[in-house]
Image (cartoon, rainbow, N blue to C red):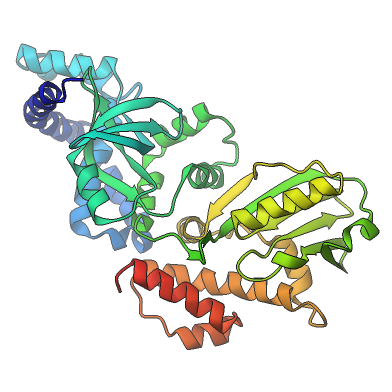
Length: 399
């Protein structure tokens, strides 16, 4: 690959396209009031998006308008027939035609390799497509923070992709988080095509995630803390087989089997069995905890899902609650046990830790001063565990 020549091409494309895109953007704003539509969305979500700041909001507005123009079946197809657009210089009109034929897309990707300065071998987490990306912005972002995935608007110049507008580097979101978020926006989302279609239709909801981009991973002694769960049909439960490895509890037609070695912080590894629904749910707060549950269930002859159905970071759960106003209720069964005190300290601890995280993450993201002792006292979280989590997050955020 001749990266030097490719770099020159990318720069030529950027230099040529910038004034063309600016003109067509203002044309679109005037014709279809896209800027006003964006402003209304900002007003509707000002509690969340207001934290992005005016300067960032302006850049996202530009990105939003350009996306509406050049997305699949975007407005550019209509504009190419307008007399004012047809009157553009031939080279500019042909450029717009080319963009109409090769739709732009807002997507998410991770970087696999960096073969040359500002060039990245990337993988689209939605489609699985591998592509070469030129992005000085990605280089800057990677130099400033840890990034698991990027989000942004990309287009092809024929030899590689380039970004347009703000580039979002997410420190604690991954593919599972984006899919889960999409499902909360539209429970009917089941396929990759439907997810891509939702982003095209409702880009602003995905731009809102930018507010949470710098929240770091939550870890304890090398274990990443997140919600890891699966559910499966189960029409019977032989309690005696579980008693060696699990501590068994019962409340309101629900069994809770806590893995004795990993039932406390940070793993909280347990299995719930709902007698009425005949459903078994595996739940843990670390990958190690979940994998250990699967191993024990397999030993008991239970064919448990090796890959979890849900793998959601605490930061995304917080984002969903603030954006949608709804709690995903990932620990819905836990409420049956957290009210019981005798011999069920770990149930109380998990419920308290969940409440602690639910209040801590929004405060950290909005840079609100936290009275840690008061928060611990109010939620009942284990003081040592809560302080370790808080100090680790503050260290990662350089606060």
